[in-house]
Amino acid sequence: MKSKVILLRYGEIFLKGRNKSYFEKLLIDNIKAKLSDIECEFVRTQNRYYIENYDESLTDEIVSRMKKVFGLHSLSIATKIRTDYDLLNEAALEYAPDINTTFRVTVNRADKSLDKNSAEIGADVGAYILQRRGGYKVDLRRPALEIKIDIREKGYSYVFSGVEECAGGMPVGCSGKGMLLLSGGFDSSVAGYRMARRGMQICAVHYHSFPYTSEQAKQKVIDLAEILTGYAGDIKLFVVPFTEIQFAIHEKCRADYMITIMRRIMIDIAERLALDNGAGALITGESLGQVASQTLQSLTVTNEAVGDLPVFRPLIGMDKYEIMKTAEEIGTYKLSELPYQDCCTVFLPKNPVIKPSVEIAKKEQARIEDLETLIETAIKNVEVIEIKAIK
Picture 1 (cartoon, rainbow, N blue to C red):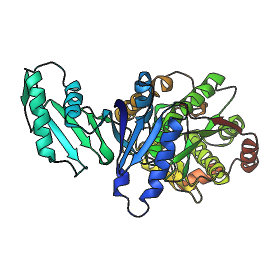
Picture 2 (tube, rainbow, N blue to C red):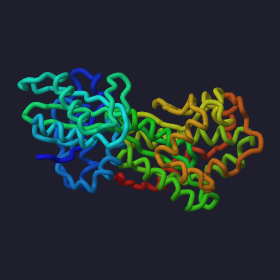
Picture 3 (tube, rainbow, N blue to C red):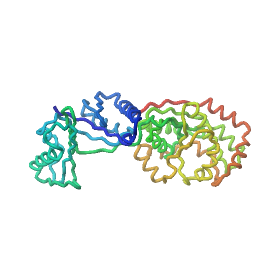
Picture 4 (cartoon, helix red, strand yellow):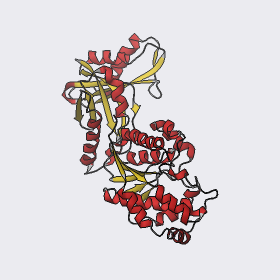
Protein backbone atom coordinates (compact mmCIF):
# COMPACT_ATOMS: atom_id res chain seq x y z
CA MET A 1 0.00 0.00 0.00
CA LYS A 2 1.43 3.36 -1.09
CA SER A 3 -0.33 6.65 -1.70
CA LYS A 4 0.28 10.38 -1.82
CA VAL A 5 -1.01 12.53 1.04
CA ILE A 6 -0.71 16.19 1.94
CA LEU A 7 0.53 16.78 5.47
CA LEU A 8 -0.70 20.01 7.08
CA ARG A 9 0.92 21.74 10.05
CA TYR A 10 -0.54 24.56 12.11
CA GLY A 11 1.43 27.28 13.85
CA GLU A 12 0.32 29.59 16.65
CA ILE A 13 -2.43 27.25 17.80
CA PHE A 14 0.31 25.24 19.50
CA LEU A 15 0.61 28.12 21.98
CA LYS A 16 -3.01 27.92 23.07
CA GLY A 17 -3.98 26.33 26.36
CA ARG A 18 -7.31 24.94 27.45
CA ASN A 19 -9.19 26.63 24.61
CA LYS A 20 -6.95 25.11 21.93
CA SER A 21 -9.83 22.94 20.71
CA TYR A 22 -11.84 26.08 19.85
CA PHE A 23 -9.13 27.33 17.48
CA GLU A 24 -8.59 23.87 16.02
CA LYS A 25 -12.28 23.51 15.21
CA LEU A 26 -12.31 26.84 13.36
CA LEU A 27 -9.19 25.87 11.43
CA ILE A 28 -10.59 22.48 10.47
CA ASP A 29 -13.87 24.06 9.37
CA ASN A 30 -11.95 26.55 7.20
CA ILE A 31 -9.85 23.76 5.65
CA LYS A 32 -12.92 21.68 4.87
CA ALA A 33 -14.64 24.69 3.30
CA LYS A 34 -11.69 25.04 0.92
CA LEU A 35 -11.99 21.36 0.01
CA SER A 36 -15.78 21.24 -0.26
CA ASP A 37 -15.81 20.68 -4.02
CA ILE A 38 -12.92 18.19 -4.09
CA GLU A 39 -13.42 14.51 -3.39
CA CYS A 40 -10.91 13.66 -0.69
CA GLU A 41 -10.57 12.55 2.92
CA PHE A 42 -9.48 14.83 5.76
CA VAL A 43 -7.77 12.94 8.57
CA ARG A 44 -6.92 14.38 11.96
CA THR A 45 -4.41 12.79 14.32
CA GLN A 46 -2.60 14.24 17.32
CA ASN A 47 -1.17 17.62 16.20
CA ARG A 48 -1.29 16.49 12.55
CA TYR A 49 -3.74 16.84 9.69
CA TYR A 50 -3.66 14.85 6.44
CA ILE A 51 -5.52 15.12 3.16
CA GLU A 52 -5.81 11.66 1.66
CA ASN A 53 -7.56 9.67 -1.06
CA TYR A 54 -7.69 12.46 -3.62
CA ASP A 55 -7.08 12.54 -7.34
CA GLU A 56 -3.33 13.16 -7.57
CA SER A 57 -3.84 15.31 -10.67
CA LEU A 58 -5.43 17.84 -8.26
CA THR A 59 -2.37 18.03 -5.99
CA ASP A 60 -1.29 21.50 -7.16
CA GLU A 61 -4.83 22.85 -6.81
CA ILE A 62 -5.19 21.50 -3.27
CA VAL A 63 -1.77 22.85 -2.27
CA SER A 64 -2.63 26.28 -3.69
CA ARG A 65 -5.84 26.40 -1.66
CA MET A 66 -4.21 25.22 1.58
CA LYS A 67 -1.54 27.92 1.31
CA LYS A 68 -4.30 30.52 1.71
CA VAL A 69 -5.80 29.04 4.87
CA PHE A 70 -4.88 31.27 7.80
CA GLY A 71 -3.73 29.19 10.74
CA LEU A 72 -1.74 26.71 8.67
CA HIS A 73 2.02 27.14 9.00
CA SER A 74 3.34 24.73 6.37
CA LEU A 75 2.57 21.62 4.33
CA SER A 76 4.39 18.75 2.68
CA ILE A 77 3.46 16.34 -0.08
CA ALA A 78 4.26 12.96 1.41
CA THR A 79 4.15 9.28 0.59
CA LYS A 80 2.09 7.16 2.96
CA ILE A 81 3.20 3.55 3.33
CA ARG A 82 2.76 0.61 5.64
CA THR A 83 5.58 0.69 8.20
CA ASP A 84 8.14 -1.72 6.83
CA TYR A 85 11.90 -1.22 6.63
CA ASP A 86 12.14 -2.20 2.95
CA LEU A 87 9.23 0.07 2.03
CA LEU A 88 10.84 2.94 3.94
CA ASN A 89 14.04 2.52 1.92
CA GLU A 90 12.18 2.47 -1.39
CA ALA A 91 9.98 5.45 -0.53
CA ALA A 92 12.93 7.52 0.66
CA LEU A 93 14.86 6.77 -2.53
CA GLU A 94 12.02 8.32 -4.54
CA TYR A 95 12.78 11.65 -2.87
CA ALA A 96 16.50 11.42 -3.74
CA PRO A 97 17.07 12.68 -7.31
CA ASP A 98 20.05 11.28 -9.16
CA ILE A 99 22.37 14.27 -8.78
CA ASN A 100 25.49 15.21 -6.85
CA THR A 101 24.39 16.60 -3.52
CA THR A 102 24.61 16.41 0.26
CA PHE A 103 21.81 14.89 2.31
CA ARG A 104 20.60 13.54 5.60
CA VAL A 105 17.70 11.40 6.74
CA THR A 106 15.68 12.60 9.73
CA VAL A 107 13.39 10.12 11.45
CA ASN A 108 10.60 10.77 13.94
CA ARG A 109 9.47 7.51 15.54
CA ALA A 110 6.17 7.72 17.38
CA ASP A 111 5.73 3.93 17.15
CA LYS A 112 7.87 2.65 20.02
CA SER A 113 7.12 -1.01 19.26
CA LEU A 114 9.79 -1.14 16.54
CA ASP A 115 13.08 -2.92 17.26
CA LYS A 116 15.17 0.01 15.99
CA ASN A 117 15.33 3.58 17.28
CA SER A 118 15.15 6.73 15.14
CA ALA A 119 18.92 7.06 14.68
CA GLU A 120 19.27 3.45 13.59
CA ILE A 121 16.44 3.68 11.07
CA GLY A 122 17.87 6.92 9.69
CA ALA A 123 21.33 5.38 9.32
CA ASP A 124 19.93 2.34 7.52
CA VAL A 125 17.87 4.42 5.09
CA GLY A 126 20.84 6.73 4.50
CA ALA A 127 23.09 3.77 3.73
CA TYR A 128 20.51 2.43 1.29
CA ILE A 129 20.44 5.77 -0.57
CA LEU A 130 24.26 6.03 -0.63
CA GLN A 131 24.49 2.63 -2.29
CA ARG A 132 22.20 3.77 -5.11
CA ARG A 133 23.17 7.43 -5.51
CA GLY A 134 26.86 7.66 -6.26
CA GLY A 135 26.99 11.47 -6.07
CA TYR A 136 25.56 11.69 -2.56
CA LYS A 137 27.45 12.66 0.59
CA VAL A 138 26.10 12.75 4.13
CA ASP A 139 25.99 16.17 5.81
CA LEU A 140 24.17 16.18 9.14
CA ARG A 141 24.53 19.94 9.71
CA ARG A 142 23.69 21.75 6.49
CA PRO A 143 22.49 19.27 3.89
CA ALA A 144 21.16 20.41 0.53
CA LEU A 145 18.51 17.69 0.78
CA GLU A 146 16.72 16.46 3.88
CA ILE A 147 14.51 13.39 3.64
CA LYS A 148 12.10 13.07 6.54
CA ILE A 149 10.43 9.92 7.80
CA ASP A 150 7.54 10.15 10.24
CA ILE A 151 6.69 6.75 11.71
CA ARG A 152 3.27 6.89 13.31
CA GLU A 153 1.29 4.54 15.48
CA LYS A 154 -1.14 2.06 13.90
CA GLY A 155 1.42 0.82 11.40
CA TYR A 156 1.72 3.73 8.95
CA SER A 157 4.66 5.94 8.02
CA TYR A 158 5.03 9.12 5.99
CA VAL A 159 8.06 10.01 3.87
CA PHE A 160 8.70 13.46 2.39
CA SER A 161 11.42 15.99 1.67
CA GLY A 162 9.96 19.40 0.87
CA VAL A 163 8.24 21.84 3.22
CA GLU A 164 6.14 24.63 1.70
CA GLU A 165 5.14 27.68 3.71
CA CYS A 166 1.47 28.51 4.19
CA ALA A 167 -0.18 31.79 5.16
CA GLY A 168 0.34 31.40 8.91
CA GLY A 169 -1.59 33.57 11.34
CA MET A 170 -4.77 32.51 13.11
CA PRO A 171 -7.97 30.87 11.79
CA VAL A 172 -10.46 33.35 10.34
CA GLY A 173 -13.34 33.79 12.76
CA CYS A 174 -11.42 33.48 16.03
CA SER A 175 -10.95 37.25 16.48
CA GLY A 176 -14.42 38.63 15.83
CA LYS A 177 -15.58 40.71 12.88
CA GLY A 178 -14.20 43.97 11.52
CA MET A 179 -15.57 46.54 9.06
CA LEU A 180 -12.94 47.33 6.42
CA LEU A 181 -13.00 50.71 4.67
CA LEU A 182 -12.19 49.38 1.20
CA SER A 183 -11.09 51.69 -1.60
CA GLY A 184 -9.61 50.72 -4.93
CA GLY A 185 -6.02 51.48 -3.91
CA PHE A 186 -3.21 49.25 -2.71
CA ASP A 187 -3.49 49.87 1.00
CA SER A 188 -6.97 48.97 2.17
CA SER A 189 -7.08 45.49 0.62
CA VAL A 190 -3.70 44.70 2.20
CA ALA A 191 -5.05 45.95 5.53
CA GLY A 192 -8.02 43.60 5.21
CA TYR A 193 -5.68 40.71 4.41
CA ARG A 194 -3.52 41.40 7.44
CA MET A 195 -6.47 41.55 9.84
CA ALA A 196 -7.95 38.36 8.37
CA ARG A 197 -4.55 36.77 8.98
CA ARG A 198 -5.01 37.59 12.65
CA GLY A 199 -8.29 35.70 12.66
CA MET A 200 -10.72 38.53 11.97
CA GLN A 201 -13.80 37.96 9.82
CA ILE A 202 -14.10 40.78 7.29
CA CYS A 203 -17.02 42.83 6.01
CA ALA A 204 -16.34 45.95 3.97
CA VAL A 205 -17.68 49.37 3.11
CA HIS A 206 -16.94 51.31 -0.07
CA TYR A 207 -17.92 54.91 -0.91
CA HIS A 208 -19.08 55.48 -4.48
CA SER A 209 -19.64 58.93 -5.96
CA PHE A 210 -21.59 58.23 -9.14
CA PRO A 211 -21.38 59.67 -11.80
CA TYR A 212 -18.02 61.19 -10.80
CA THR A 213 -16.68 57.73 -10.12
CA SER A 214 -17.41 55.12 -12.75
CA GLU A 215 -19.01 51.71 -12.56
CA GLN A 216 -15.56 50.39 -13.47
CA ALA A 217 -14.21 51.84 -10.23
CA LYS A 218 -16.97 50.12 -8.29
CA GLN A 219 -16.36 46.81 -10.08
CA LYS A 220 -12.67 47.11 -9.30
CA VAL A 221 -13.50 47.19 -5.58
CA ILE A 222 -15.84 44.21 -5.94
CA ASP A 223 -13.03 42.30 -7.68
CA LEU A 224 -10.57 43.24 -4.91
CA ALA A 225 -13.03 41.98 -2.31
CA GLU A 226 -13.38 38.74 -4.25
CA ILE A 227 -9.62 38.20 -4.12
CA LEU A 228 -9.72 38.78 -0.37
CA THR A 229 -12.37 36.08 0.01
CA GLY A 230 -9.73 33.56 -1.07
CA TYR A 231 -8.12 34.21 2.30
CA ALA A 232 -10.89 35.63 4.47
CA GLY A 233 -13.98 33.70 3.38
CA ASP A 234 -17.32 35.27 2.41
CA ILE A 235 -17.40 39.08 2.50
CA LYS A 236 -20.46 41.32 2.69
CA LEU A 237 -19.68 44.57 0.85
CA PHE A 238 -21.67 47.75 1.57
CA VAL A 239 -21.50 50.30 -1.26
CA VAL A 240 -22.46 53.72 0.10
CA PRO A 241 -23.69 56.45 -2.32
CA PHE A 242 -21.49 59.38 -1.37
CA THR A 243 -22.04 62.00 -4.08
CA GLU A 244 -24.47 64.24 -2.19
CA ILE A 245 -22.26 64.26 0.91
CA GLN A 246 -19.22 65.21 -1.15
CA PHE A 247 -21.16 68.03 -2.80
CA ALA A 248 -22.16 69.31 0.63
CA ILE A 249 -18.57 69.20 1.88
CA HIS A 250 -17.42 71.04 -1.24
CA GLU A 251 -20.05 73.75 -0.90
CA LYS A 252 -20.00 74.33 2.87
CA CYS A 253 -16.48 73.59 4.16
CA ARG A 254 -13.20 75.36 3.62
CA ALA A 255 -11.10 73.74 0.92
CA ASP A 256 -8.07 72.71 2.95
CA TYR A 257 -10.30 70.77 5.40
CA MET A 258 -12.33 68.93 2.75
CA ILE A 259 -10.39 65.64 2.98
CA THR A 260 -10.39 65.81 6.78
CA ILE A 261 -14.17 66.26 6.90
CA MET A 262 -14.69 63.57 4.31
CA ARG A 263 -12.63 61.06 6.32
CA ARG A 264 -14.55 61.90 9.48
CA ILE A 265 -17.91 61.31 7.80
CA MET A 266 -16.68 58.10 6.16
CA ILE A 267 -15.56 56.62 9.44
CA ASP A 268 -18.80 57.74 11.10
CA ILE A 269 -20.85 55.90 8.48
CA ALA A 270 -18.56 52.87 8.69
CA GLU A 271 -19.08 52.68 12.44
CA ARG A 272 -22.86 52.84 12.10
CA LEU A 273 -22.81 50.04 9.54
CA ALA A 274 -20.41 48.04 11.70
CA LEU A 275 -22.64 48.28 14.75
CA ASP A 276 -25.69 47.29 12.70
CA ASN A 277 -23.90 44.23 11.34
CA GLY A 278 -22.15 42.79 14.37
CA ALA A 279 -18.67 44.13 13.67
CA GLY A 280 -16.60 45.07 16.69
CA ALA A 281 -13.88 47.16 15.02
CA LEU A 282 -13.10 49.38 12.05
CA ILE A 283 -10.15 48.63 9.74
CA THR A 284 -8.38 51.19 7.57
CA GLY A 285 -5.35 51.09 5.28
CA GLU A 286 -3.73 54.20 6.70
CA SER A 287 0.06 54.37 6.97
CA LEU A 288 1.56 57.08 9.16
CA GLY A 289 2.76 60.08 7.13
CA GLN A 290 2.00 58.57 3.72
CA VAL A 291 -0.38 61.37 2.65
CA ALA A 292 -1.86 64.51 4.19
CA SER A 293 -4.83 62.67 5.68
CA GLN A 294 -2.49 60.24 7.45
CA THR A 295 -0.39 62.53 9.60
CA LEU A 296 -0.58 62.12 13.36
CA GLN A 297 -2.82 65.17 13.64
CA SER A 298 -5.09 64.01 10.80
CA LEU A 299 -5.50 60.57 12.34
CA THR A 300 -6.30 62.16 15.68
CA VAL A 301 -9.03 64.31 14.11
CA THR A 302 -10.46 61.28 12.29
CA ASN A 303 -10.46 59.20 15.47
CA GLU A 304 -12.45 61.89 17.27
CA ALA A 305 -15.38 61.17 14.91
CA VAL A 306 -15.54 57.53 16.07
CA GLY A 307 -17.86 56.69 18.93
CA ASP A 308 -17.33 53.31 20.59
CA LEU A 309 -15.39 51.05 18.24
CA PRO A 310 -11.60 50.68 18.03
CA VAL A 311 -9.92 51.56 14.75
CA PHE A 312 -7.33 49.02 13.59
CA ARG A 313 -4.60 50.31 11.26
CA PRO A 314 -2.45 47.26 10.49
CA LEU A 315 -0.31 49.18 7.96
CA ILE A 316 0.48 52.11 10.24
CA GLY A 317 4.23 51.38 10.38
CA MET A 318 4.68 50.03 6.85
CA ASP A 319 6.14 51.97 3.95
CA LYS A 320 4.65 51.98 0.46
CA TYR A 321 7.17 49.47 -0.87
CA GLU A 322 6.25 46.94 1.82
CA ILE A 323 2.53 47.44 1.16
CA MET A 324 2.88 47.02 -2.60
CA LYS A 325 5.05 43.94 -2.13
CA THR A 326 2.30 42.36 -0.02
CA ALA A 327 -0.27 43.35 -2.66
CA GLU A 328 1.77 41.46 -5.25
CA GLU A 329 1.98 38.41 -2.99
CA ILE A 330 -1.76 38.21 -2.35
CA GLY A 331 -2.81 39.01 -5.92
CA THR A 332 -4.37 42.47 -5.55
CA TYR A 333 -1.56 44.53 -7.11
CA LYS A 334 -2.65 44.48 -10.77
CA LEU A 335 -6.21 45.42 -9.88
CA SER A 336 -5.17 48.20 -7.51
CA GLU A 337 -2.97 49.87 -10.14
CA LEU A 338 -5.86 50.23 -12.60
CA PRO A 339 -6.47 53.99 -13.10
CA TYR A 340 -10.12 54.17 -12.06
CA GLN A 341 -10.77 57.01 -9.63
CA ASP A 342 -12.51 56.42 -6.33
CA CYS A 343 -14.46 59.05 -4.41
CA CYS A 344 -11.39 60.15 -2.48
CA THR A 345 -10.03 61.75 -5.68
CA VAL A 346 -13.16 63.75 -6.45
CA PHE A 347 -13.17 67.47 -5.52
CA LEU A 348 -9.65 67.22 -4.08
CA PRO A 349 -8.21 70.51 -2.80
CA LYS A 350 -4.83 71.65 -4.07
CA ASN A 351 -3.40 72.14 -0.59
CA PRO A 352 -5.06 69.90 2.04
CA VAL A 353 -4.31 70.72 5.66
CA ILE A 354 -1.50 68.57 7.07
CA LYS A 355 -1.97 69.38 10.75
CA PRO A 356 -5.72 69.84 11.26
CA SER A 357 -7.24 70.56 14.65
CA VAL A 358 -10.28 68.86 16.13
CA GLU A 359 -11.90 72.20 16.95
CA ILE A 360 -11.68 73.57 13.40
CA ALA A 361 -12.73 70.24 11.87
CA LYS A 362 -15.85 70.08 14.05
CA LYS A 363 -16.65 73.72 13.30
CA GLU A 364 -16.31 73.18 9.54
CA GLN A 365 -18.33 69.96 9.66
CA ALA A 366 -21.09 71.77 11.54
CA ARG A 367 -21.53 74.07 8.52
CA ILE A 368 -23.28 71.16 6.79
CA GLU A 369 -26.65 71.81 8.42
CA ASP A 370 -28.44 68.78 6.99
CA LEU A 371 -25.52 66.36 7.45
CA GLU A 372 -27.43 63.88 9.60
CA THR A 373 -30.15 63.64 6.98
CA LEU A 374 -27.54 63.15 4.25
CA ILE A 375 -25.89 60.35 6.26
CA GLU A 376 -29.18 58.61 7.02
CA THR A 377 -30.19 58.83 3.35
CA ALA A 378 -26.85 57.39 2.25
CA ILE A 379 -27.17 54.48 4.67
CA LYS A 380 -30.76 53.87 3.63
CA ASN A 381 -29.64 53.57 0.01
CA VAL A 382 -26.63 51.35 0.63
CA GLU A 383 -26.17 48.58 -1.91
CA VAL A 384 -25.29 45.30 -0.20
CA ILE A 385 -23.27 42.82 -2.24
CA GLU A 386 -22.72 39.30 -0.93
CA ILE A 387 -19.37 38.06 -2.22
CA LYS A 388 -18.91 34.32 -1.85
CA ALA A 389 -15.48 32.94 -1.15
CA ILE A 390 -13.42 31.80 -4.10
CA LYS A 391 -11.47 28.61 -3.55
